Length: 226
Figure (cartoon, rainbow, N blue to C red):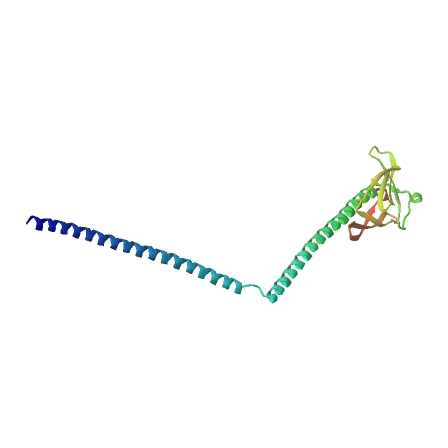
């Protein structure tokens, strides 16, 4: 009986060992299968990534420019460049023309204003020392200074500039350096009731290669002529 009991105990131990070994083998097989599945998923994902990259490269290559398209694009770019450059130069030239017109009108306005004021305040014309009705003309006026003493004011052309003398002393130019006087004619108009002077002045303003010309006219009655 003791021997049979000993055999049963050994058999139970071996059965427990065999069951544990079986469970261990099954766990190992499950782990191996999981490892294989993980590797398979990794390789599958990598192959899919390569496939996507290949398709993207093929698609990008199929969207390249042909020679005809390149020629068309270059032609369009050239036209746009030419239009832009022409517009820029046109704007620059328009601004330069505006400045020339401003110089011309400013010089003409200031010159005629001074001429009108001096003629209106004059008592008469120093005809022997004036060049009337000719170009370039010379106009010498008989007037008075601020103190009431007799003096003269003279307009004349020198180096294409209209200059002025007060009391026989040069007082500078009435036109800017960018404006040239092309003609200056003073005419005496006299009747039984009054005396007047008709002045004609031609100016040309220049900046760079842009020039603009204009004529200015005025007729003023002398203070001593009425």
